Image (cartoon, rainbow, N blue to C red):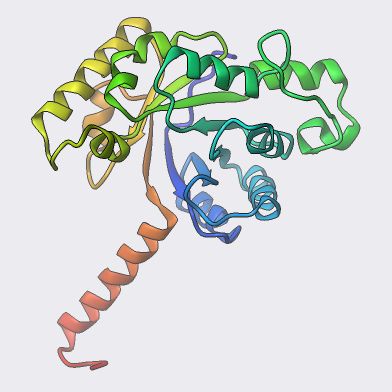
Length: 250
């Protein structure tokens, strides 16, 4: 992996609409995560989103549902700059993700230069293989207490570029109550483990938490989703209109 810094601020793309990527780029986001785990996005739409992201100057990542060949091969050959792989709880699972995503000798990913990542057949095979192993970013998600405990070892696996702490799944899997001090302590300890090993770290940043999280050492942040941004923006518009002119529209 090259030593380039991670793009800093991003958003989930959950709506199956390529225009979401374009709008996020116009808003100034550095990267978009096309969510194939939770979003209803088919492969054709994903490919279009990746192409549009490249054209708009926003970095396209894809959150895949798993590490089956079909999960990782299509977005990578479509030109995704990296993948987020959910529910990585151990070194063994991290190593399995590397095998699925990287070309030999690191992994077992199949090779074909006929897609966008291979410049539609015009790229030299060596350049295509080098880019897949050195330039494509593999980010694994730590979303359980065992994952946080082993986060240093997980992030140190050769072929992995960063770890992303997922607080919602962590709360669910660990059965932590909302605003749990125990969960906060678990996350803080995981942050320190990553700092000790200089492992790039990301997470979600709700509300105005971005500045605080950056001070705590996070390298990249997902600020929300296209769906949430639309809902919140629509809510504020309606709220402002009803406050200004009570009874309008009722």
